Image (cartoon, rainbow, N blue to C red):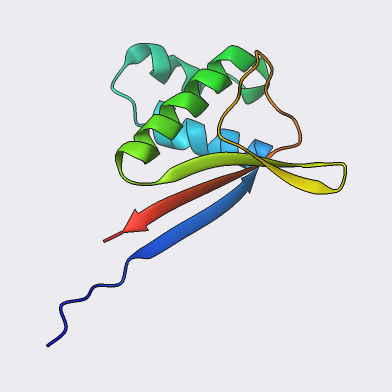
Length: 104
């Protein structure tokens, strides 16, 4: 009998606003930390870009610790460019976010 197991990957792509909603649901609403919990009471428009970037970094570390990936993509001069994270103080307005999780 063959003990080979196929690895399956779940891939989810989100636009910027959907990704922000994902970050709130996954890392703010489920947080035990009262500082993060307070964000669930604030309008998404009032959350500072630095906070969104911090949440994105947290999500990236979380996914990578589970064997997954998180990256952003944007179209530049008709070429799709992949980014491993945000390396500025500004939230990227036109990125598509890709979440890849490895299923066992």
